[in-house]
Length: 281
Length: 201
View 1 (cartoon, each protein chain N blue to C red):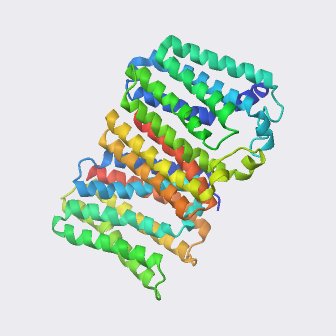
View 2 (tube, rainbow over the protein chains, first blue to last red):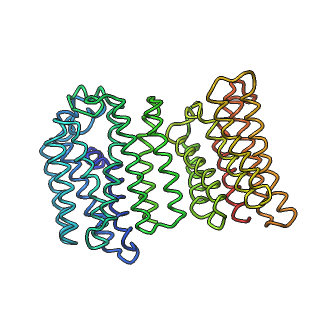
View 3 (tube, chains in turn brown, blue):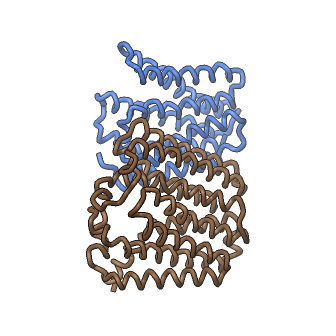
């Protein structure tokens, strides 16, 4: 049973799903106390988990041909033939439908944002733009910002500047994460003929783009955290973590090495997770 | 040398303690000490995270000497500002000039042993300040006895600084393996002493 299920579990990219889920929870908790809204918290967690997992599986299903060409991804269950494509497609659609269905049942606007996140990620980003332009990641970034916006909207009861700024924080953070990744696996993307920033504009421009997006992500998270009313102590921690992110981004521009690039890629994830934890507590 | 799981756990706890200190441990202080302590514990937090992510290789970066200077210099400045008001200006001047001197001597070619002498002088004064000031104030009764833990943390930071200096000089008196084995534990113990000491003080 466990052996049969394991390939399906790896389809959902549990770490990435967990990180995005944490942004949704942070968005909600930035407006509401989780203890007094336990039922909503559970609904939020389940609907986000189903939706994010569903869209991730649909992406994997769509990209299985290019995954098979890339060294890093060719052992993925769909690319390696461990799972039949139609099974993955059905599972992806089922999880997405369940996630959106639950979200709509909880709150129509919340459900609409969750649906938009899946649509931008699967249709606009993966199916339409990913293989055509390096700028497709902007749409990947927009869909990445949807869980935190959805969480905030559900907690606050509508759109506000904090929710928008939080999702901008994620949007600007995504390039730091994805562009360092596309430099690390440059030859893989080249082999699969996927346009990336490094292949379209070169490594130096890509590093500058990472540095600029890191600055913008830090500013957005800082403003949003201030708006939420984060205590001065937590703000200090956030500032320190932001300075770490900016320092690594600047280092990667002026003293680029493989190690700095990898450090920035990993640190960006730690930064985002830490920011979310600070907002939650 | 590869970083072990235990090392990562020790460094994570160090980072969490540093984050706790930044968030909760320095609220009652005056403005400049808040900034100084935030810099010191912030460097510890970021250093802990980078060691976890990149392993001990990160210690080979030339900037490590400069960045690690920030910890004792800013801690000492914060302590002097809080507890020795008459020395505020002179100590702040010393810290700023000292930091610039270390940046300059580590960034440009310098004659003989000048970079080492500058580093030893700045680290020595800052280290002795962190070591002696809290202990003396605790003994004199001008601070709670627990404040002496900051001094113990100061002694540990001195040991850590020496070990790193030996390691970076290429002629360590202790083996590289030994230094890297004790470093995460030493950093944790030092941070713990600071957190306990500042809470008491």
